[in-house]
Amino acid sequence: MKEHAMPSTVSATEARVHFLARRLALAESYDSHYLVVAESSHAELWTLDRRLVRSVTSELPWVHWAGAPRA
Image (tube, rainbow, N blue to C red):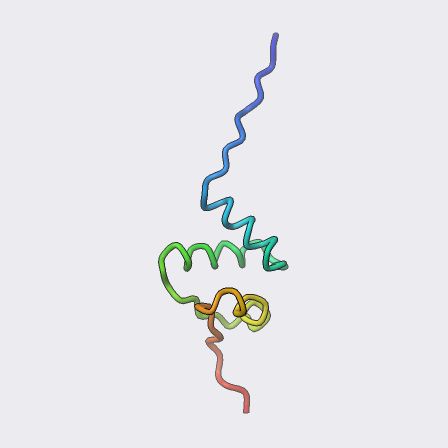
C-alpha cells in the first residue's frame, strides 16, 4: 500500500503569525497571534504586557502600553 503525504497548507494568517514571531523574537507564540488579529483588523493593540510593547513598537507603532504612566 502506497502512503500519501498530507499536503502541507499554511494560510496567509498562519504564515504572518510565524513571520512576526521570528522577526520580533517573541517569547510567546500567542503574542504574534494578537498582533496579527490587530493588524488584519486595522486596529491598534493596547496591552498591559510591557515586554511586548518594548519589543515591537519600533516596527509596529500601533502597539501601545495600556497601563498607568509610571510616576
